[in-house]
Image (cartoon, rainbow, N blue to C red):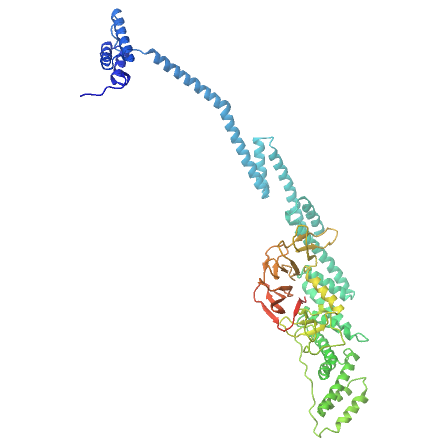
Length: 628
């Protein structure tokens, strides 16, 4: 079989075979292989060199008569192998030495550092969580590993400081629980200086100040009550209720009842009578009834004062029959009530109402009114007797049934009894705005009687109070506006200003300076774009209602005093909702809105639900204040 020759002799397998025979001293076989290669490849240098070498070694072997070896000991490979092994051993020794001198210490150092870092981290976490024993153990472990570790030393120092703070906190809490308030306040003050925020020190200090102030107020109130200084006692007891409504609750309610009854009766029994002070007396009787809701004495006094004021109002309005009925009920209920302040207008109203009946004519009713006038003590009987004589001739033998005005009792503690809005008193000024408790004072553009009005929260019992230009009413109204901005305890004031970093007016809270323990802090409540104004603090202290243009229109918003939970109650497209005011129980908000064209007064629940208009008129009514 013909095979194509290789490119060079070295590539031919027979060349490798010849070299193998050469190395094994198999001269004849080697010569045979190289001669065959010479025949195929001619004068190839590698083949010629190998052939010459083989023939030379064959001749040399034949000349020395050396017997052909059956095996060959190759010294060079052995030496090379030995040298390689030695080099590997030396290298291994060097590597081991390098590892022992450099790598292992570095590994050990890295492991040590990682262990220290873990212990330090564990110590810091335990320290922040006030797990002081765990923190101390971790920092001690670090110092065992590295005695000069600065972080461990600082950590142990911090543990010692926190142990001291914890000891102060435990001592302060113990003193507080034992009622040693002054000493407890000293400890909490130390804590507030050393570690602000720890151990609720600021809260405790405020609570202690309130309790100490409450106790001082209690002693002062009791002293004022015992001395008969009932106005001072009432003011002091009410301050105590603002601080702690449950403190000596029953006793304070009894004291308030007695004080208000004494103050109210002092006005009613004054000599000479002081009819202009009856609204104040009515307020005292109403507040006494609030302290004892089922007390008949307070209810009677409230009823008589209300009847007198309603009768006086009717008399001033020229409604003489109504005035005679109401003032007559006062006289019949207590003949000496306010003396001439009841008898004189009752006498005149009876005469005038008799004249009205005579003109109808209804001579029977006219005679009865004149007779009632003559029955009053200390009056000019000549006039009423003459009137009786004039109508007696027209009476039939059968007496005309007499009229006995029926007066509806007043079961609820209202601040006033009202006649319809058309009956406007012109002489006696209305009682102070603050006396209309749980009623809504507002401004009205009524075409006939523009000015200040008052109504019940459901829109009933409207009463005109006076013109918008009335200086006295404006001063009282402004004072009520300022009161709306105070927290229930009177310690904080919410106001509107533009701070250095504000782009528009925002709500801020300023704490009033109380005593030697320092100023209360000032904080910003709102941080939103647009105008923020008209703040009103809820009576329970939990929320502040205000108006904001943050979302494009004037809407009523509510926010917590700390600035959280801000909520738009009346999201509008174009309307204005302004001037929010809270109900006394903090469950509803009243405001005015132009959402129906004119300014009208609306009410919404404190959860932002159940929006409704409480009074519907074709003119503007606005700027309500719910009297607390």
